[in-house]
Image (tube, rainbow, N blue to C red):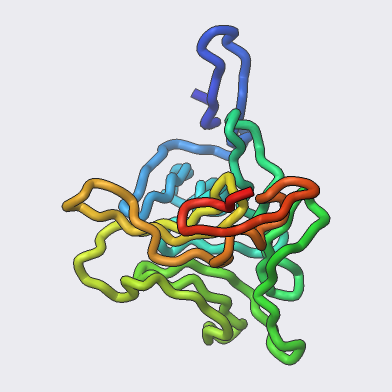
Length: 204
C-alpha cells in the first residue's frame, strides 16, 4: 500500500529486499514486454525500474553504466566471486573477488564509451556519447529473424555468454562467450593445478 515493492522470507516473515520507494508516490507497477519492471507515479512517470538495477543478466535493450556490474551467482545462491563491471573509462571488465581482472575490452585511450548495451539483434556493444558503437561482440545468430528471445549473463563459472532460445529444442543455446578457453577464467582450475580445456569444462 505504501508503493514499495518488497520480498519477504516465507518462513520468518523478514524483509529480504525492498525497492525503497515507499515515499515516492508509486501508484502502479507494470511488467513491460522488454522484461523491464516499472513502478510508476500518478502521472505514469517511472519512479523505479528493474533495468537500472541489474543482477546477473542483461535483457535486450538493457544497459550497464559505471559503476554498475553483473554479479555471478554461486552454487548456493549467494553472490559469487565473479563480476562483469562497467568502468569509469567506459570499458567493461571481468573480475574475480573485486581485485583480479582477467579480461578487459581494452579500448584505445582516445575512445571514450559512455554506455554498454545489449541489443535485441544479438550484439553487446560499447557506445560513445553520440550513440556510435566503438566496440562490440555479437552472437553467431546475429540478426537471425527466427530468434525471439536472447539474454546476456555472467554465469557461476565466471564467463559472460549470450544465450538464444531455441523454440524447437526448448533450451537456451550459447551464441557467444567472451573467454573461449575456460582455463583463462581466473580460479577455474583451482590453486596449484595443471589445466587442460575441452568444450565442456576445464580438465584438471
